[in-house]
Length: 457
Image 1 (spheres, rainbow, N blue to C red):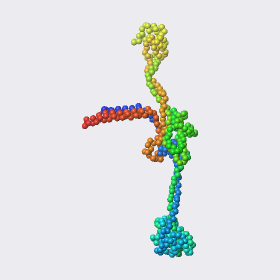
Image 2: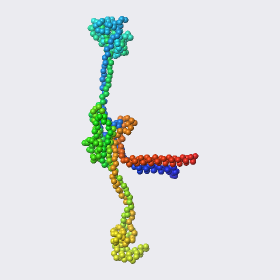
Image 3: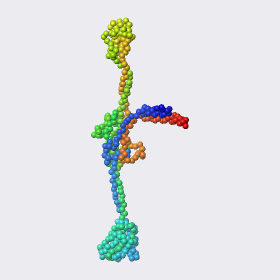
């Protein structure tokens, strides 16, 4: 496949951007520490862990109270057989009206009466009879109430029903005459008031499971933000999986030599309000041990005495004078015959030879070295490096206004964050390289492509 010039530039830029990202940012695969609600230990009837808040759950009590107001309605008009009889029925023992059986006494009140209102009538006569309370405009086709008079002077109370909020009615004696002395009505107005009482539990707590990050050097401190609302929140840690708890009087816990921890928050209330935890963070230091592989060429002496064609006799010198290209002069032979062992086994001022090595003396054997270069891999441990990590046990959102309100949407943004500033600088550098590469592409590649396109046209 043959790339065009423009395509080659694009491919080169892509490779360059990828390598720049690896070099400057150096991404590391840091796993998420997801702390879902099941990862906490708490009573879900007392603690509410939702909508990015940890708070107490209130008990809501609704009380309903009814009050009844009584209003007295007086008679403003009384008509019997076309005559005004008001003065006879608006006071007691100042006269009466003798109502003949099946005749109507029409009464008008100072206000409307409704169902469950009571109309009271004082009756005087010596005969028993039923008395009806009827609609004045319908000829008693609608009866509001019926009562029996026993023939003795007494009060008869009619409880109104089936009314249509009127202020007048008819009194009718059914079988016998009756003397009506006094009439008035009682209007009842009932008001219902509903009050809601909110009561918070006195105390409740929430704690994490055991937290034990890998490669940890120490825990540094516990950070939190909360809204107390004049209430109290106390924080604790445990090093024995919750058997005992130690109060966190200051956020710094670096003096505690531990690698496993549990965090607990205890919320207390005066029953009128609740404190709220907005975020809870655990900071620890991670140990990073880097290993560097170094490759070097080391000259290892190799004994070739057992190789075919290279066997030598160390006890008897070998005369190679008859071999082509290996003739020696009568001086070297004399030296050998004088006790100098073959193969350079003599001691000289230039150095001392040993078995398997070559002496650095100028008077040694002129035989070529039998050592072969071999590459050795050496693992070198670099100095230990420490970096701070952040475990966000619970975190409020950056923009709560845009947060979807869902009681089942528990916050699980508890990710381990790398706080190294070098990676942040690397990220900014990578963004700069990316911008610069885009400018090159825009002004070089696209321009060349446009010219090629115009030329083809």
